[in-house]
Image (cartoon, rainbow, N blue to C red; front, side, top):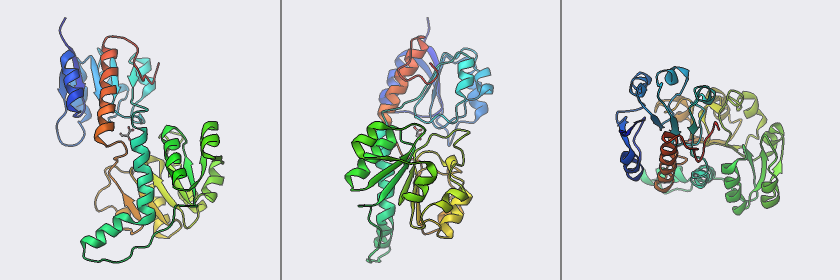
Amino acid sequence: MGKYKVVMSGKTWPNAYEKLAEHCDIQMWEGEGKIPQETLRDWLRDADGFFNIGHITVDEELLEAAPNLRVISQSGVGYDSVDVEACTKKGVPFSNTPGVLVEATADLTFGLLLSAARRIHEGYEKVKQGNWETVFGVDLFGKTLGIVGMGDIGSAVARRAKASGMNIVYHNRSRKHEAEKELDAVYLSFEELLHTADCIVCLVPLSNESKGMFGEEEFKAMKSSAYFVNAARGGLVNTEALYEALKNEEIAYAALDVTDPEPLPADHKLLQLSNVLVTPHIGSATYETRNRMADLAVQNLLLGLEKKPLVTCVNE
Ligand code: DGY
């Protein structure tokens, strides 16, 4: 029996690659930007496994083109670009990498809030330009943080906020009794949270229901002093509405690790504003975390190739 054929839609870390190469023949996309869907379809024609990295669209058309596929293993937690139902219909197990990226993503999320509140990035720019002048920000201590989407990452952000002396309110599909007990987090309706919070962090998975959940009405409902952070998916926010809210000072500041579109073009009007901070989707981007994600994705892939249960299967 020969080696399995595995397609990788992007590069991964040396340890993970070597582990995979012991058991598989690998075809890996090393080109600029995303692998074109047509190329991916072509490569998957005789593939046994697909290592999905880089927000690749997995739909019926792609699955139809891959009749031998035994498993799709994604290095990444959010699977809004994957039609999980279609995978299930085709009998293809699909896994992601939850858990291992929680703390890194929470660090980045809280870091964005801290940097926005204290204008750390603006201060550095000034120093580089030879302007040694005071840059004023706002306190986080004593303020109320509203977390929309209180999953593992939301709870990890709440712990960091609590340590900084913030009060926590949250909105989630279900109540999180542990967070309420441990962190004195108070459950509010989405509308109540928008009115109440001084800072709002969005950590909701993107779906048909959540798409555009932060629009004109929601920004108008926020305090004019509100800080808004999005570290989940750009599509949760109506970019035009956010731009208008920031331009008209309906809210004070936005710090975004994710945008719609992505990448955000350098000449995008959002970047002309002085009350916005944008990072290039780096929530999980630490050496340690990305290695853990890759290792878990390889583990899932190898299990799937052997038709064994995956560690973190989405469509069990
Ligand atoms: C994820 O894992 O979903 C992050 O957004 C990185 O892609």
